[in-house]
Image 1 (cartoon, one colour):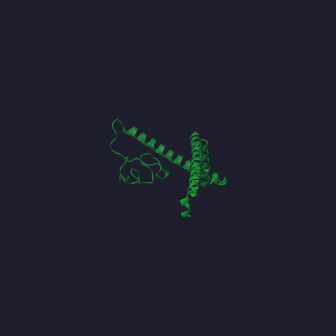
Image 2: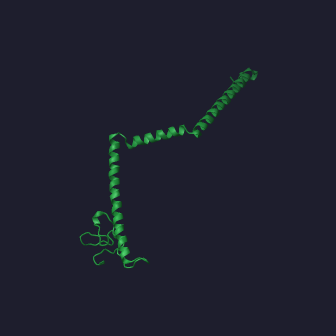
Image 3: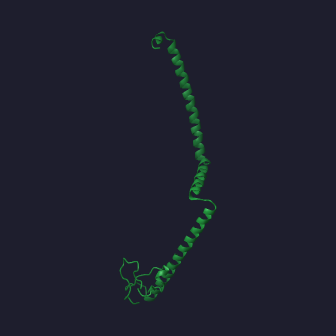
Length: 155
């Protein structure tokens, strides 16, 4: 490995890449192919030979190339999915509406919702009965007050 001609700036996106012909000096992969090069380090981790390190660098280059390929395939699949949804008239807004409708239906069929609805219904009936009783009592009291002799002075 010839460190001459390699970018050794650790902040550089091209660190460890050869400046000659765009080839990665470590993995043999093209820099334009998407593989990220590993910077050349003169000291190896303990227990790792130069040959093992070179094999690992080559394997790393291959794995990174596979990752790049999978990203491209995923992007193509997402575009195809979006196109199919467009042809079917499924816009993101329609999908959101469908999800909300399904979610609301799920809530309405849940036991907790049913129990809460029953409890609120009973509470509403009791409240209505209480107001009705209170209204009748007030009407009766007002009627009683009108019958009193001093109430004529107010009207």
